[in-house]
Length: 232
Image 1 (cartoon, helix red, strand yellow):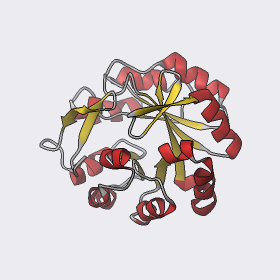
Image 2 (cartoon, rainbow, N blue to C red):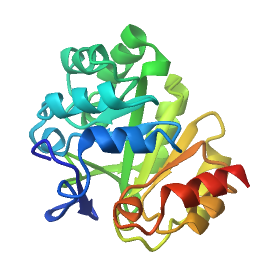
Image 3 (tube, helix red, strand yellow):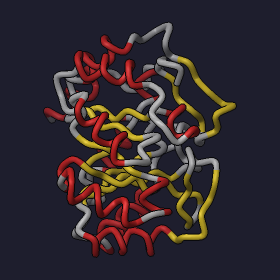
Image 4 (tube, rainbow, N blue to C red):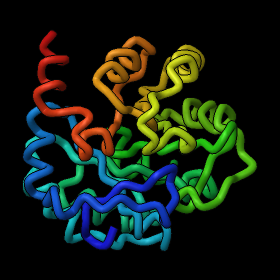
């Protein structure tokens, strides 16, 4: 947000945690490369406005990263998706526009390939949230996930907004059921990681990956802990 590294609590823009004084973008990108298979970036300003807002900051992260970078937030037309991929981003994450205009998602899958396009499914209760989590649609998450699976989408990021930034752990039962129900999708879990133990538990649910941020920024999970966990 504003070119700085921040975290929101439960997606609330008024509950912003600013970590920019402790972490610069280039340093973070380099540090994440020591343990992560990829870096997840959200243009929060873009998610709210509907257009790319933090392009320079994203470019700085990509230039410093040693692992693939995926970006979401404000990608609501083909030109924005193409611009972000041309920066060197490995995967564009679609959200609001994919839900509201499914033909846009199909166009992206055709033009940029399934490897370069993922869909973010952000949940408030059973329903999909949009517009930077500010609005809740009338579409149930399971209905949308089935539609994505039928369309040939491969990568989906699922965030339970109630847990996001709360450090209280993920809903492991929920993700286990989700992976069993949608076995053709590669599901990445997000929302609530607070410890290395959470990483171990989510790994048993069948998800393809897990995203976390605040726990690392606040020192609850360290690079050494993650490396030791991955090597154990």
